[in-house]
Length: 324
Length: 301
Ligand SMILES: [Zn+2]
Image 1 (cartoon, protein in one colour):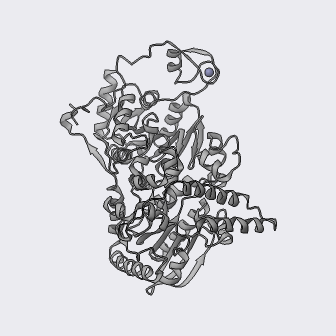
Image 2 (cartoon, protein in one colour; image 1 turned 135 degrees about the horizontal axis):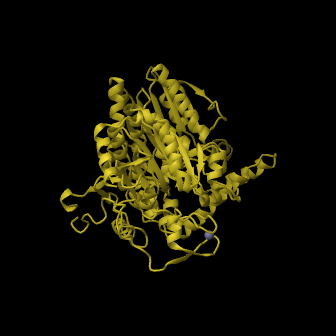
Image 3 (cartoon, protein in one colour; image 1 turned 90 degrees about the vertical axis):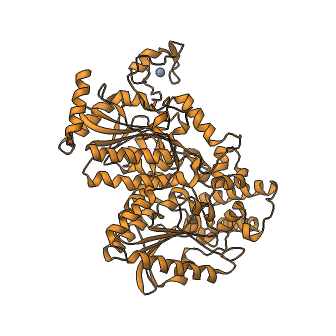
């Protein structure tokens, strides 16, 4: 099914490129995906597991499901009067990140989220949800705008990662990610991050330094894609399902590791089957956390944010006695 | 952890016996000439015939930069744990990998942190060693960098980070990603204390480290021959299906795109650091304890 969808998208892109638009990059990308998919279908399918105890790889597939609610769906349903803001004031506007002001339960908030496209045309515009540096710089600009007026920040994350391209490197994508991470620690308003689909590596954490980090039940959050991990460590990209299990990238694992604060339940089969339910649950959680955070003095808020991330990591202490 | 002991901890630079290789000569990979190893070492691991840079280990790098006798290892006695119980496809478990790296490098971890003087100025150094699992950043590196920053504030020393890393430590999964945030969150302490952070990028400085602490310096220097970037060449090439520019992600590329303040030859790195540090000198107040310690050491030397 995804296979046919990809083929259809490639076909559409080819038609589009006849109008003089250069889409060779996007077409190549889709073809690569298609090829990867072909390889996967050759490999034996993972054994089905009961809906309640979804296999990690099943969750990866759900997190990437093309019908899954995306950032704009959340904005539409959770907020009112959304007013989109564009451009980083330095280079351009990146449609892979949506930013703006909106009303959430009567309170003006800043919304920042990565956005995937539903069809080929939109995916060209949204770059498959893979932002360039200007996207992250726009996000920072708008978050700082919010800070000036005391508007809390809500981020929604659904990205395979920052875009791996020449332009991104030329415009210092690494530096842009670093700057966002750093600045988020000093943003004097509450920040709530929610991983709604794919939380892809540096491109995700650059929007996910929050006082609270929430995660949808079937979302994933990882240092590397399962495919990338499989290619590097297992030297075989088709071992992505194994890599997905090894990386512990699903919400229940991450809750245990102390990386996220709350798992937002989804209906059996995934958020796309009953979007209203998921949206409702997330709304309730956002409201609850926002209420708690708005009650904190700014200094305490910032100290807690810093301490929360300072505690992350697991290592082994060597007793002094064994050193002497 | 008794077997671990202090064998790998507390890096000492002034070991009278340095482990020498059996062979006296080596063949330069760049020019193909046979060169005298001792001569290469004396020349900052640069080929005396053609100028090619060879890798520097973290201890070698420290030795190259600090005032003789001034270095003291201040690493926290911690080593990598295995929170994910991660096993590579070849069956090697993560703790095995760590142990192997320790044996091969003689180091406890992929990063050494220490207190030293450079041209008399107090610095806290954090130096990565690429030999140790690609100098990748996991929970240990994250904590050691934070520890180094805390020390810099306590001692009113400049913080000098020298990166040689492929990025995040995949075997620690999401926790390695979180080190990007953890290290970035500590960085502010230096700004609040008005202490300079000098970030030196060497071959290679990429991915998770490049996209966090390494890109947050007050002054950013690239060593000649550095590789600087977020996504690896191979991945980009696969994605865009095009050949990449010849100079892509080189030191020159980083400089021309405004990512670093200056490019510095390895043999000039120490002098360059001294020049930079001198401009911050009034802020590097030498607390009496530091000054006395340094004086004692200088007297011994
Ligand atoms: Zn040579």
